Amino acid sequence: MKYFITTAIDYTNGDPHIGHAYEKILADVIARYHRTFHGPTFFLTGVDQHGQKVQQAAQKNDLQPMEFAQMVTAKFLALWEKLGIQKDGWAETTDPRHKSAVRKVLQSLYEKGELFKAKYSGYYSVRQEQFLTDKERNSVGEFGTEWGEIIFLEEENWYFPLEKHKHWLQDYVGSHPDFVIPAFRRNELVNAIERISGDLCVSRPKERLSWGIEFPFDPDYVTYVWFDALLNYVTFAGYLSGGDSTLPDFEELWPCKAHIIGKDILVPAHGIYWPIMLHAMGFPDDQLPRLLVHGWWNVAGAKMSKSLGNVIDPDLLTDKYGADALRYYLMRDNVVGQDSDFSEERLLVRYNTDLANGLGNLVNRTINMSQRYRDGLLTSTQIHDADLKALQELARSVTQRYRDAFERFEVQNAIEVVWELVTRANSLVEQKAPWKLARQPENASLLDAVLYSLAETGRLLSVMMSPVIPHSSARILEQLQATNLCELAWGGLPSSHHLGTPSPIFPKVA
Ligand code: MSP
Image (cartoon, rainbow, N blue to C red; front, side):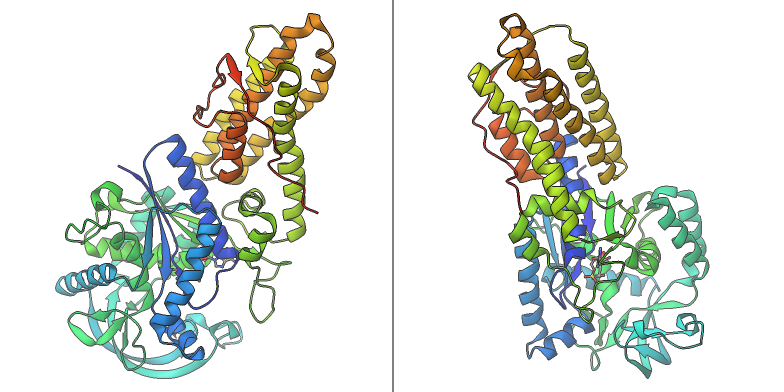
């Protein structure tokens, strides 16, 4: 069984921004952690290429929907490459393998009586691609500006019954407290389930929206974007692939350990439609996925938007500071589930304080001193020194707490724990002053023990930080000549070991 995680698939109606980047980095960090410490992992991400938004964006740019979707898809792919996102699967909803499996799901739901056709008339939000009911009216009885242009529409469509599954979902969520993490996001869902009424419209007539997957039993209709998009989590994991060897083995991956999504798409899409869809498709309760819901990155307390001109471009930031700096900042300054404010100044402070002065300086000084005083040869000696023992004890506790935090998806907490060790090791350098010990022949063994302890701490730190700053961690391990020494227990460096040549890992950025 592989550890299977996914992210939301990003709309291809516009360029990637920092919110998209954050989510993919979070997932990549969690996937890398599992790959390193647990074993086989499969990380699926991708792009949501169908729907009205893409069709409209393509029209504006005088392109066919497919051309436009592919152009934007290429930008996402290039950014993920640049940010070191190590994905195992790539979901594009225009992929024929996906389309074929979606059609099979539609056919089977139809045969089970889980899809029916009905006429509906009402107010419709073009931006959100949904009919609006009185529930969507604000306190003064109007549909707010968030719905964009609103038209009155009468239309026959295909519906997926939601209300009849309401009690099942209530029971399921009630008896599976970790269906949604963190817990406070689950409470939002519990309240929303109580309000479920009616059915979900899952089609659009082709004359209004042609850019979608055609219904197998009614070619005048295409699927509505959510139905098509949610199914990516199973279709790209090999569900109903008919043994297609280009896709994974579904049995080996499913159920997904975490769909990593933003708070805006928990209710109703992932918290209501998705489990009900899976239930209707015949998935038993023990085969349902878990949802890890993160908050949003805002700018000075405001939502990013093109009209405000405050959209943060991850591509430019990566060029300026490097992928690891951005990865570190986004993981270090956000509590998963909560919102954060993006600030380039904070990014720079974190980079200079934590990475350059903290971790980088520790490793650099350690290797430099070992080269200067011992020609790079480390010797582990058994001497009794309370400070070194305390450092070793702290390392033991930090590695344990780091793992516990990661198992709970608390990435920020894990990093904070690691920094206890960075800080302690840096103060140990000042306290032990190896440059003084080097002039005292009677302290030769103590100097050996100090240098070994510092190098071993550097090794543990770079192993623990490798999911977050993979490139920098690899460079540290190279300089420590410890590329294959990834054990998370004290003593991984052999008792007699040659260190490599030091070179600054995090050059100061002004
Ligand atoms: N295509 C749908 C998801 C379908 S999943 C079956 C979608 N796409 S999106 O491009 O609008 O958003 C993709 C992800 O980025 C979502 O999880 C969303 O919450 C996240 N974010 C979008 N803006 C964000 C921030 N400002 N901050 C953090 N994440 C944000 O929704």
